[in-house]
Image (tube, rainbow, N blue to C red):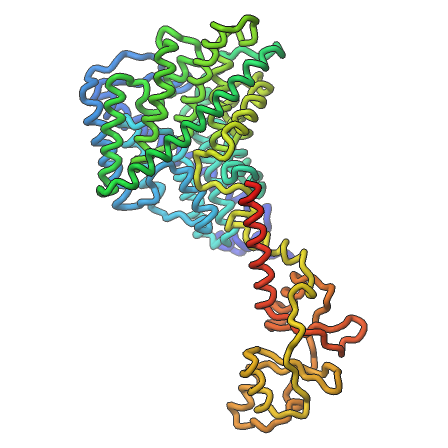
Amino acid sequence: MRPEFKNFYDLAQAGYIKKWVILSVLIGIAAGFGSIIFYWSLTTATHLLLGQVAGYVPPAAGGEGATVFTGVARPWILPVLAAAGGLLSGIIVFHFAPEAEGHGTDAAIDAFHNKGGYIRRRVPLVKAMASAITIGSGGSAGREGPTAQIAAGIASALADLFHLSEADRRIAVATGIGAGIGSIFKAPLGGAILSMEVLYRRDFEYEALLPSFIASVVGYSIFASWSGWSPVFGGGIVSSFSRPMELVSYVILGVVCGLVGIVYGRSFYYLRDLFSRAEIPRWIKPGIGGFAVGLIGVFLPQALGTSYGWLQFAISGDFIALPVTVMLALVVMKILATGLTIGSGGSGGVFAPGLVIGGLTGGVVWHLLQGCSAIAITPSTSSAFVVVGMMALFGGIAKVPLAVILMVSEMTMDYTLLIPSMLACSIAYFVSGDNYIYEKQVNVRAESPAHRNEYSVMLLKGFKVRDALTEKVPVISSQMTVDDAANILKMHEVHAIPVVDVGRLVGIVAKQDAMKFIFHGQPDTPVRDMMSTDLIVTYLDESLFDAMNRMIVHQISQLPVVEREDQSKLLGLLSLNDITKIQCTANASLHSLQEHFG
């Protein structure tokens, strides 16, 4: 009979469906309200800092406000403002929760693989405050990383509240990542897919998919009920794909986005490493990075903040507000500004900058192809190239092509570009190769500590007892005394010894049993009077997995290996240590193969 939980706190004992429906709804509620609180904090900080102090109101995405640029009233204050914002963010992060440093999605991925899904409860609050200040003061970063870490942190707290296993806590954290990002981007399907795709470079965490479907829908519904149901970049502005000849241009776009993605990833970690080597207090570094970003903003304010409004100009084809020269400069400066902001220790995400860089790259490539193509291989408007560029660059360098295709389609409310986006994303993915933007991703499930036991079991099922047993083992006869048996056990440093009379296995003596007789002053007791005759044995052709299970069930560390046809014929002894040696050797070989083949 399946166990039922008697109260809300016994959720870990409930059946799979009941447990994950309840958990997914709770994680979705947390993601939805967490997204509302962070979005409000971010817009408020942007209004107070960039708006009131610097006199710069960044244009908004079409579904989130007015896409209008009115200039910067006090550009000279931008370096001071961004430095102050970075400094305050650094003080908050490094004093209260250093793990909230940098882009939050990577920290959540690290928690999944290496920390049993555990995220300290203070992290969501610290991440929200630090990220709102960093981005609101002009830092070049995205809102998805903070939201992912906020939702994942709350999911981790829920797992502790309901006493979930480590495996369930990990799935809850993955679900929180997808629900948080799906909520704040109004892209529930893409967010759900992201939850299982973002953890690996070439694999999926499929256990997180169904919980993420529920959590993303709940989170999206809560956030959209507050912010409005319009997609982030509006809808109906992208020209549909209808000419196969255009696929040639999308191949070119995929190659370019893959190459620019490599520059984005490598420059980000170059700057991060540069700051980490600097021998100055960690909390000061975000202020230095912020000052440098502010200097960029004096000449190119489009690089400040999330830059979503400028991406909207590119999607809409407004080349008066965003000339192609500015677009090209912004590609370069957005890469630099993002590395300076987050690589210095500032708090924010790399998703939004990646979309902006990819979209603007698409716009630049469209202009170049329009000017040099002898035949019409490009769409008539740039919107399609901008949207596919968003997908290709970040989908390739983040190793999440499927999730990004779906998310950007939801953010633009346009699904007519699936064919060219699939082509361009695949090419960008392969061009980017082993380069990445999320360093805590692992290649496949087998490399993750989260699945180490799972793959160890698979390895053990492939080996037989004959591969691990010790054939030359000491034996004793039933006529010997307990004292004799104890001395032989000590001499050979074993925990059990078979009892063999006239070539026939008749029993086994455990070290702990022999020591009990000696402790009670009975060293001369014959072995036949204290040996165990109810033997638990194994066979040469049995798998190590089955043999190990038998040891665990019967709480013993060694098994006599006998013939199936004649169980009195001893062939050797199998110990847990023998199994562990085989397991370690197999794991090392698997790791070497993974490194060799990448």
